[in-house]
Length: 438
Image (tube, one colour):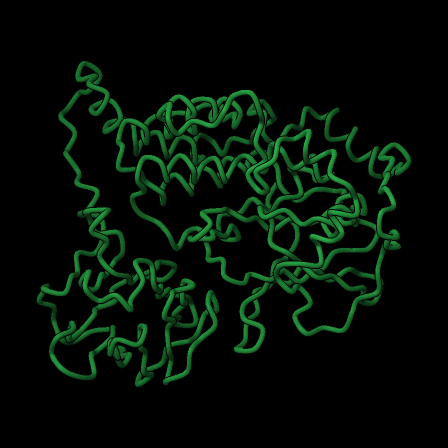
């Protein structure tokens, strides 16, 4: 089942970037909505809601988070494991907030990443009917595994093998735990809630008053709208929130229907549709079987020697010392000669071009183009240019010094259309360019 709710992306200079989803009021899961509004976990985007003509409009604030796919490339051993843990753990523990895994928007395009906190955030649609199934979950995992690679080749290939098989996130996380050095491993005596650093028992014992107080802090999710009409009466401070799931007949019927059909999003045993052997799973096998066998030293299974592919070669090798053709689509430097004169952006529709600063700690190129490591005003992951059907757009990845378009700082994670002659500046170090289109 593909995502059956339309997600609209909107952005402007005042509110930044946000998503809008409209659902029917009779589809609303009030149990999850009430709990989320009282205590919104970090693993979902905060949202504001209001009633419009019998429907519920949900508006999700993206804030400082960027699309996870913008961070494609090699991750260090520890970061790679943390990424997958942050991606899968919320789907297994969301029941603490009365959330259903099938109500997560499991489309890699709408999964976000906080590069500072290193936390993955989902779009959660509080609906009793769900919006995703195992196929969507598996397809998302495949897409992430293609974009997010590891410097530890053995670990990466174990991840690929796990995803190719009957993917079970619980077993997958156990496999990852075996690769965590003992000195970095979490204590086995407590199941730690990553969003708050608490054990489950501590979270469940937390008072409603504390949750209500926390909900008034943090990011403002009103986006300048008028205060919405509450769909559920807000309890007095200190009053226990008791929700009897059995009392909601429609909710219970929906749950039983999913269980009766053998539907378990994350068991790996649900009914999965095959597209005459041309599904994503088979395609991924064809792509990874040869290099996986070779890296695991199984030459007997190879009929012909597999070519050795250097992952770094897959990136567009443009550095400050690279000579490029001055003609083409890209950014032309305006100023003195100490910075690259031209940054060629050669991407097809649907692809992205990332811009950052060389990270000596990583020891290898992580972005499509990287400024010299001495260019401190440019962040290691600074901005991305994406090509869509309606042209090129630039997005600031919550960089420390910001990205400027025509001398105006653009909000982070807010796409801005590029047209010939537009001036683009990265930080305040004089990295000033003009966008040209061939």
